Image 1 (cartoon, rainbow, N blue to C red):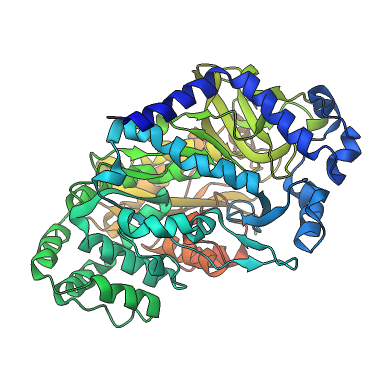
Image 2: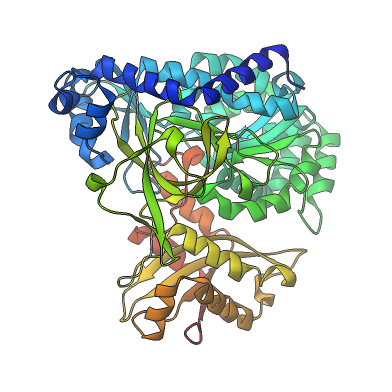
Length: 580
C-alpha cells in the first residue's frame, strides 16, 4: 500500500541500516569536528577528533555530570561550553521516572534530525495501513504544558509541547486531527481531555487512528469516557458545551464545530450503555485502523487492559525515542506489544552500549565499573546480550548514559534491533537484594493470571519498600477492575492472598533466601479503589508533568504520592508464608 514517495523513504532506511558502521563513524566524525574545540571536549581531546582518542579519553557520564555545564548555558553563558552551534532552547524530560525534569540542550542541527523522525516513523506504518493523512483524521489525546523561560531567555518545554508549537503542526492540525489547538493548550487537563473526546466523538466517522504518546494516556481517556459518556452525549444532542468547561479557548473552539445532533448522540449512547466495554474503541470509531501509542517499557503493564478496550485493533508502538535523541523504528508495526523490537537508525546519534549482565538470574547489574568497561559500538553488539544505552549527540551530550537497558533481539541488515527491557536503577531493595523493574513485571504477570478466569483485570500497579517496621517488605498497590459488570467487592480475599504468594514465588533467588531468613517480611498487596491511579496522575500533572508525557514511576519515592494511594486503600493482603 506504500506510495512512490514512501518507497523512497523505505529505501533510505534500507541504505542506513545496510551501511550502519560507516554512517556511525561519519556521525561521530561530524560531532567531533564541530565540537572538539568546546570547553568540555577540549579538556579531554585537546582539539583532536580521532575516534580512538574519543573512546579512550572522554568519560561516560550521567545527567548530573553534565548539569553544571547545562546550567551555565541556561543562566546566560555562551553555548560553546558544550557545543559550537548555538543552543536554541531546551527540552524538558518528563521527570516522573527519575525525579526532577532534566534540561536537554537543543540546537538547529537537532531540529533538522527531528524533522526526519516523523517521516521515518510513518514509512513502515504506511506499508501496512496506507496513508492515513489522506484517509481521514487522527483522534490523538495531546496535552501541552507551559514553557519555562531560563535566565538566559532560552525557552524550555517538553518535546511534545515543542512539536505542538511548531507552525507546520498548527497549520496541518485542522486537516489531520480532531482536536483544535485550544484544547491541546488548555491549562486544565480535564477540560482539555473532555473537549478532545467530545470533538473526537463528533467527528467519529472521519477517525482512522486513535492514540496518544503513551498507552497510559489512551487508557486515561477511555476511563474518563466511562465516567462522562452520558454528559458528552447530552452535549452532542443539544449542541451546547457543559457549563463546567470554563476555558475560553475550548468554548470558542466548540462554538465553531458544535451543533445539535440527536441522531449521533443516540448512536453513541447505545454503544456506551452496555454491560461490557470490551472493544469499545472499535465500536465508537469504526473506521480506526490501529491504536498508536508507546506500549513498551513502563507502558507494557497497560497493554492487557488496552487490548480489552480495542479488541481486534492493532496496538502499534511506532518508534523508540527519548528527550536526548530519537533512536529507532518499529519496522513490524503489526507484531504484538510483547514482541516489539526497535531498529536503531545510525544517522540520529552516535550510539554506544555498556554491557549489562544478568547475575543470579535475578536482575541486571553492571559487569564492572564504567571506567573499566569498554563500550561496544552499534554494529558489534551481540544478540541476546543486554546493554545500557549511551549516546553522543549533535546537541552537546557526549557518552551520556540515557538510563535505558535494552536487549539485542536481532539485526536488520547491519543495524541491531533492540527490545526495551527497563529503566536502569528502578529497583526495590530492603537489604542487599536488588529487584529490577523487569523482575517486578514478571512477578506481577504471574500473579495477575489468577484474576483473569474470575472475571477481573489488574489495570495498574506501583510498588515501594515499606521500612516503617523491621524487617522491611515490598508493597504493591493494585487497582482491579471487574469485567461484565463484576464488582471488586466480589473478589475473594483468598485469591488476593494467593496473588501475594504467587508474586513471591516468581521473584528471584536472593529475594526468596532473604524472605526465608526473615531479612525481608511478607510481601503485601494493597488494593485501591477505582480512579486511584488517575488521582496519582493528577498529582504529578499538578506538579508540572505534561499529561502527554506522564510515565507512572515503577517505584514510589514521593511521600505525597504515597499518601494519595494509601488514602484510597480498600483491602490489604499479605503472603502467608515464605516461598519455597
